[in-house]
Amino acid sequence: MNNYKTILVPIDVFTDYEKILERAIKLAPDTDNVHLLYVAFPQTNVEPYGLFLERDYSQDVKQQAEDKLKQIAVENNIPADNVNVEIGSPADEIHHFAEKLDADLIVIGTHGQSGLRLLLGSTANAVLHGVKRDVLAVKI
Image 1 (cartoon, rainbow, N blue to C red):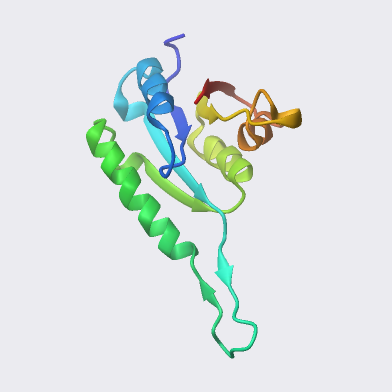
Image 2 (image 1 turned 30 degrees about the vertical axis):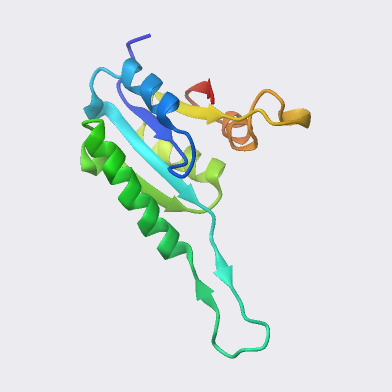
């Protein structure tokens, strides 16, 4: 399994990600081949009675996530250039970024909460649909 050269690790920096990252690092030839990705949903707040009070919070979330990812990268000897934060639909952005990197493997966490998504979380399930590379789902 060590024939993976470029590994994309989409993580939620605000939840438990350690097990996912640990597994990706074990599979990578070295940490230079590990790329971290956080995807934030667009977040806009509109005041119903105010004029021009609409505020886009996406950039605030993006900056917080980028700061946290950089800290994680330093702690794990991952190059700062391998830290990425995108805004959009998580599955779509993961697919897009995996294509952009020409990643060999996506290592993603699963929550497996209930219903049809009992085995995989909704994001992990969506990533599996239409993916053109290997995916390792790590149970959190």
